[in-house]
Length: 285
Image (tube, rainbow, N blue to C red; front, side):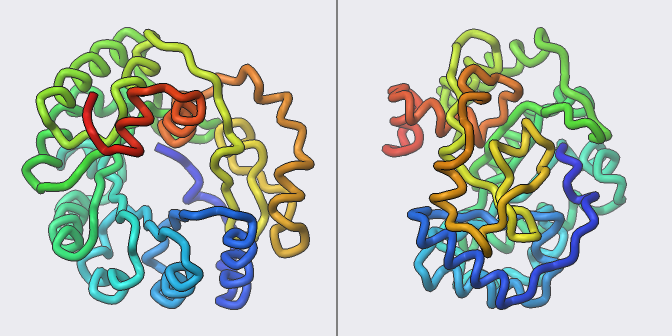
């Protein structure tokens, strides 16, 4: 589980948010996912999403789900992408990892409410603390009639949870491949599961996805390498200029993480057929 909610940074103003979104759109980006912290804590979130939607950007949201039921009517008109809800296990495990009793029930209630209005995908991170329940969470996604995306934990310097042993990951990855073939609603490609099992090589292309911090500054080259440290402000520098001016040589052979948000697009851009089919054609191969 990422530790970035612990960052102490003030919310940007509506005007700043719109300026950042305009810069992102003008750079050629076609889709965006708003994350946190917890984005639903912003009372003006609907206005921000509405502006993103109007540009137009393919607009998604990543949330812990606890406020989702109470706010889905307000935000759903501006979600033309996906609402991603983080679940770290089944009820007891999820609440223990999150440190808040009852948050599992609030999250699943939010999933049920949101799924009536927008596409919903559960985000689950495989950790030592929950690896024994990953199959159960996939089955829960099927019961809730939503999709699920699975990733392996990255050991950030101040994360409270830990990545499981390679042998354990390999075993659960093979089970996930079997579940995907059986029709469970896993959005990950089979190639991704082979990567985390250590059965497939990949070459990272971190420039395929840009991250912008709450201060409007780019995270370069990615948040796995520099723990979300920001650099160039998109309010002061053209996004294309900042990206093209960065020395990407340091990432040429990087495999610091196996995060699906980097692995999957990198595989697509490497013309991996299974991943391309899973993403572009939305079929299971």
